[in-house]
Image 1 (tube, helix red, strand yellow):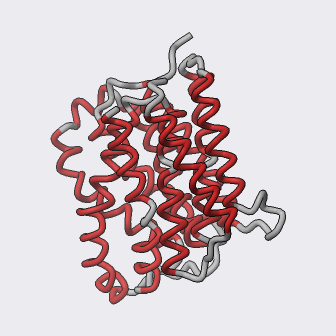
Image 2 (image 1 turned 30 degrees about the vertical axis):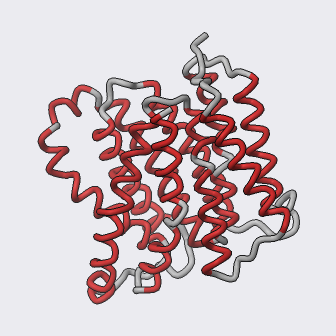
Length: 290
């Protein structure tokens, strides 16, 4: 139960991730530059740890590369989704991840999924559609929506690899996530025709540095490490479901702090999502090998 509670709390902190992203963007780091910056600080902070653990990392470099690629891609594209579409839509599309996580776990880990897990997934997905107004047809899709959806698929694959390779230390997985996030963000800056991607001036970097360092030290680094630590101890499908608590925090905070209002269906949907998390955390269903 402890890993589930830790994950629930850490994911709730992630629900406020959009706030520093938009503040950093307002300070002059546009588009993917803000995502690049918020991942660069943890990577730099972890470099001494990586150097100290280099021999152990060398022994597990192959799974680490996959973990870094997929988890980093999920983290980066989710951040871009928060920038290029609304907080609500980016978060909800990302949190279709329990479906992908469960499918990956069934295929890669041979998990047999019990009825409580399927019920929790159904409860959570129903909540997501309620919060979205029963579908996306009411508003056109944007590149930010695509980022939100792809980020959930990549995150599901990444957490499955974390679960598949328990020999990889959570510290090493976290370092790989930071590396992958910076690489993917750099690729998006250089290769994708995203709007408003302007190389920041020195004054912009100096302007965001104090806020960014504080956010990374007190929120991003501890919550990200907690999520990786929990992901090694829980089924990927369960990780996806419990992280739905982020949806509620993100949507409510966006409703309070921006013009993204919530209707009755969205509030009911938020209750469904929390109900799915509660059902899952007390189910004791960790997934079983075939």
